[in-house]
Length: 78
Image 1 (tube, rainbow, N blue to C red):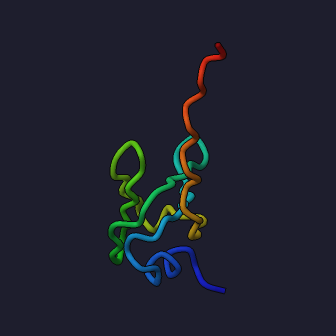
Image 2 (cartoon, rainbow, N blue to C red):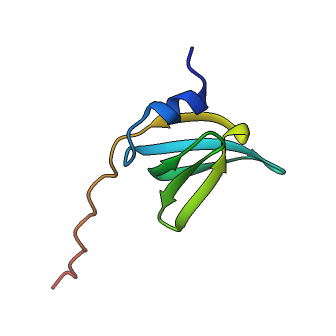
């Protein structure tokens, strides 16, 4: 079975991913495009900006499909 860090290293840059990592209070996820990966960290471009994640803290990772299209705005009833 492939480790999460090895999976991230094998994915092409630009792949949409979710990365789960340990933090002091438990775990947290980063969802976005994989923009960089090296031997110690990966960078995920989220809606809030770039999130640098240490590979040693990663507990799970996987590619995910693109986001659904945005809904059209609602129109007011006449």
